[in-house]
Length: 125
Image (cartoon, rainbow, N blue to C red; front, side):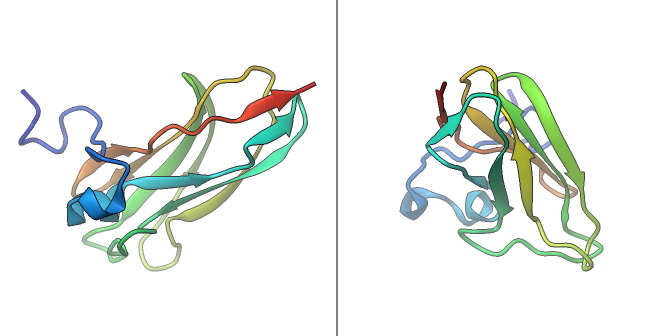
């Protein structure tokens, strides 16, 4: 139903293998970097970057509007961006009480909503 409409639902690359991604997927798929293990309830750094695999345009007519971070379905944070003056690469500091996969969502003003592949973060007591 939504296959040809980038603004219908959440877009996601069909493969985690960069060599198998289309250019559109490479430009829009957010990439998360975080430790594989963290202490429960203690802050840690999470980096999210759009355009890691292929640079995303950053001009008035085409840019990433915002980046959000989730732990499972729990909203953690959001950064709003403007074209030219900011880049779609952000650092979040989060603390987790429950172990759920981290997921980033971003919105491109021309190509809609995109979601990262989830990454697991193991909690240690």
